[in-house]
Length: 83
Image (tube, rainbow, N blue to C red; front, side, top):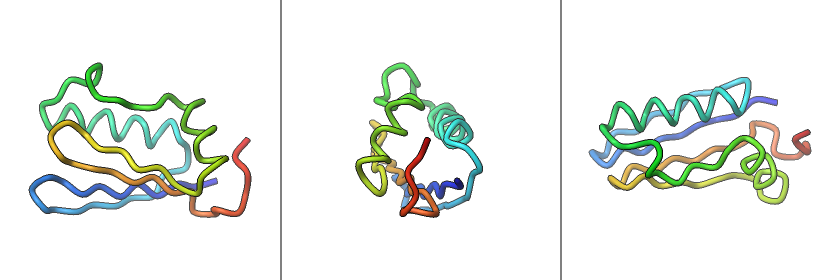
């Protein structure tokens, strides 16, 4: 399964990229948090198990950082169940 991460920065800039694993997606979001000068422990991020559970019951995930930047995670094949 591949995943699409779409980021809308609070400055108005946008970015998207595909990833092979949820671990890679989460690492990218953690890097974003660091790059934005935020504290990863204070941001409400799901761990891999929580994210898989969410994506199994929903077709995507929306998250927002404390500085207004938001991100959207979507499995590229939304009709398959994540195992």
